[in-house]
Length: 354
Image (tube, rainbow, N blue to C red; front, side, top):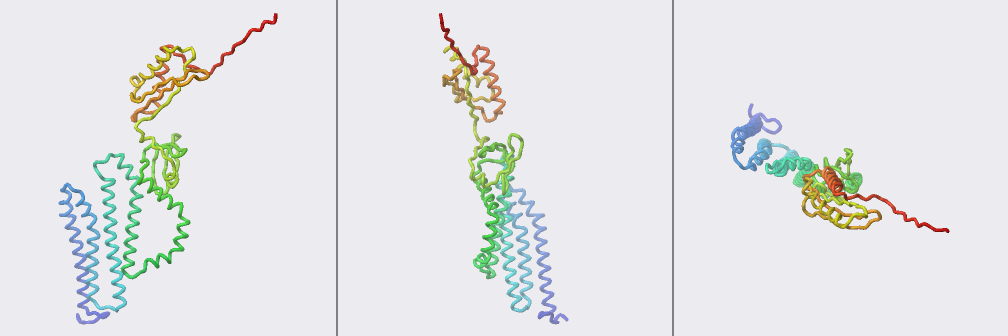
């Protein structure tokens, strides 16, 4: 009975091949259990996290590779028609290349998760910002690796990639024309990611728009303006736009024009200079550096003082400006320094008709 021939092979040969496949599956299961019970707990005790990453990445492709090899040995010991063997070998070549590609995809994703997002030496804000950017990087790298893997697999089985791309050329051109805005937005996202003109949470000015960046996607970037409205900007326009990162400035420069009446004496003007130069010591978050006070103009209705000061980054800009203005109003009134307002003086000549 064991020597009976079925589909060109004896029952014994069929049985041995089935046993090899079952043995391969059991071996793969035992390796998986051994890895979970002994290797992973051991590696978790080490200070180096790279070995944990490699272990997690290697496990699935390695087990699948063992199953592929065992199945290949079990099938190849049997007798088949020549055409079937050729097709079978081609299928195994494709699966081997795709398995290796799978390994590199898992490795790249794990390394990205750890070295870009999961580093313990990064602040929580940096981690949150980079998690927002991660989908763009991840998708691009994964698509690139799979494209290279599929191209390699097709080349190994004799497919002419150049000819295939040529055949798809017309369709590719039509697709590219239809998706050109999407492609421009994707490249714009990469420009934002690589140049990093801003991060999530930064207050920026992009052309005529100003607000807080709340999301950077593959197609567009979202900003919340001061009216709490969401503005969606295409990434390719941002890549070409002039961007001012307000959050990145070390201090905010404020310029004021203060007008005093024309009856202000030189002594009172000097006193006004003194009061303005003392503002940093009286108002919180006003920098004591680079304070500029100058008598700059004889205007139509006022003697103009230009007062330039800087607000430190940790201070609230509008609240600090309000505090400075209140201090100027209070101190100038106390010293009887009169603020000018638009006025005209008319001189009338009396005509004697007598």
